[in-house]
Length: 383
Image 1 (spheres, rainbow, N blue to C red):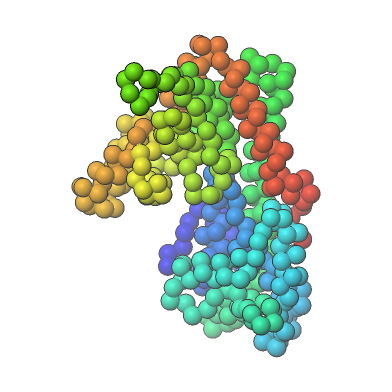
Image 2: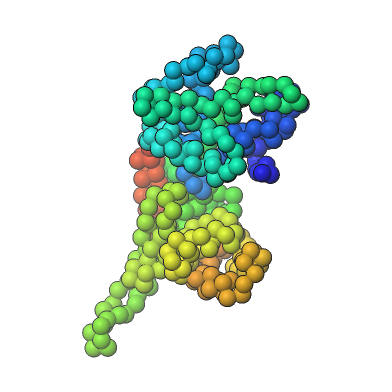
């Protein structure tokens, strides 16, 4: 399969070239396990739209670490090894940065299942498990590879690649925490300055978590001033203000919808991409229920819709299918539109409510997020 190219691929090649001078790209192309890690490290240097998933990385990490600790890369004999105990591997996973909430799924089946999806014709899977003894091995066939007839061992490089990925993810998350703390501190010192700070956060390269928090706070207050009338008969109408609810943690990779509006039942999804596949996947999740997309871009909404339609026609080539999906895009809200709505809220004198909501959501992320606890504990690269 073709090698996925992204920003962290450069770092992977740097590490491989360190261990195997001038052959990094050849090693990467020769190893399915390295290619899998390349796919799984795509989010390293982005603003972390999705919460970093370390389960599969760490399942590989702890088994390769056990392999190296026992010096099988030097002295051999791994085929006679009794295997690592599950409880030791599981405990080690939870000692690692971001790992204190990990479950056993990756070690037991999830990593192997996902690996097969990417390499369906390969006869090897990364983890070998003896269910009777509850012992585990990394598949040495994926650790030892042959290049030009010579065998090389990539175990040490794998550890360094995962370490580098954790470091990159920590940096991205620390930047998010800094934004949260800045919002809290500025609001306490100078509310007017906080409003300008919020405006400065509405830009395409802002951390995706910050963007979701800010966009939610603005839209919640913007819609909160709007009222609808409804009832079971014309004689009995109820007046109700629109309320926007967050449905989960900020940018959680939970497959759900980000905001829901009551009583209209509108769905909102925050995204940083203009990708028809992603939009249509979100639409399919809710059985083609209409969705409003809040997009972290300065591009005009008309341009976004044209691009989505072009991608959709190229992918499906069936007008009826494309039309059904496009009809489910209820509205597109870009950054300029968010700014306009924020200005509207400020004109009503409700800027303070936006600030309070941002502070509230930031405090939730800052104080409760389990990843924060890990960052405070682990300041160095995985050891």
